[in-house]
Image (cartoon, rainbow, N blue to C red; front, side, top):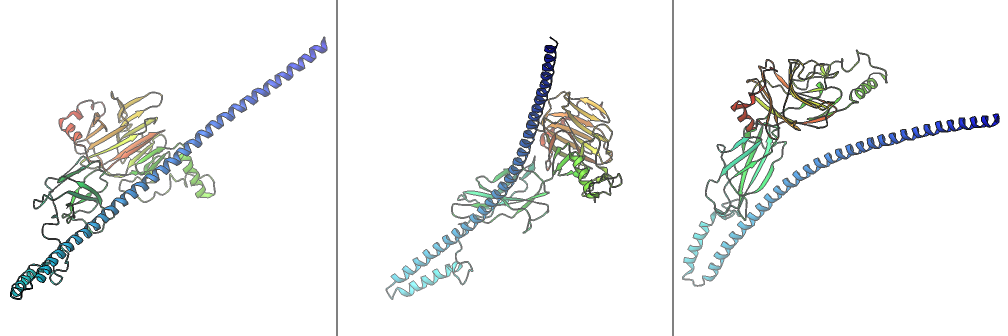
Length: 478
């Protein structure tokens, strides 16, 4: 009996050990499964990022090729039209000469020949404008065959809401005009267009009216040049005298030298990068001393700042840090009205947009001091949509839009936020700005895209004039 008990104990012990081995094996399988899922997710995300990058490159190549095709088409069309006009002029001149020759050959009667000769001389005198001796271009079209150059009416033309309406007229009534061709290009030079510009002429063909509106423009340069020509069925006329229109708008870039190390700045786009600071620290250590830990003296955060790229640049030592995941614009606002828009990723855990003084501290968060004003969206744990200034908070009773418009009227002391799509007023700060301002943004675990080169929308100006933008609830925050 005792032997049976001992055997049973051994069997139980063996089973227990086997059970532990099976559990350990199951745990290993689960860990492997989690690792496979994590690795596959990472590979998928990397692949999507690579493809997105390729798509962006292909899209840029596509736009460049399309622009080149349009320019080549316009150039070749212009050349072919000139060749067609030359052929037309040559044909008309040949017909006139042929008619004269036939009349001369038919004058066989010697008594009529002197009269015919006189008539022929008269014809030759009338044809002098198309002879080689009198005109370097013997193939010129008869008067009225080529459309006159249009005249652009600056008084009727308009620049507003990132649109340009160009109006022109013909110096003489011409019923044979079939369409017009409009060309425009961007420039930073005032006055008559220069012969050489970095920006190419953009072409719009087939315009039937004597006016045209360009919509959805981004005014990233100070001026635009325009010229128009008229075309009939056979030939195109000369271009009008080119004109230059001012395109005032607020244009800025994001100042990467001010951004928190966890923010990856690319022109006007920002993306949260949880490894950003660590990667930069590793690179700094590798550069500083073969992988040794950088001392506070050698730390890039305390090193000599690089030369300021813009007057508003804060320099490397003033980079935002700690929990202030902030980046500033590079252009000061010290007067006038300005407008810009920002579209953020709805899944961002936290996002803020507003303005700040240059004196905003590197540890300070937007809206928590008297040096900044902002609208803040929080999707972490509890969703909130608030206006913040001087550590005072006002909860906004409005749906959170995915695209926000910011309007700053420096002299009036107004900072208004809008739903960029509907132009609904979300909140307005009424204050007195005592220092120049900079556009300011913050994001945590998310991303955003800024749109600049925008004019103040007419609807925003109307709302401000009616006073509806300052109606509510500024008292608790100003």
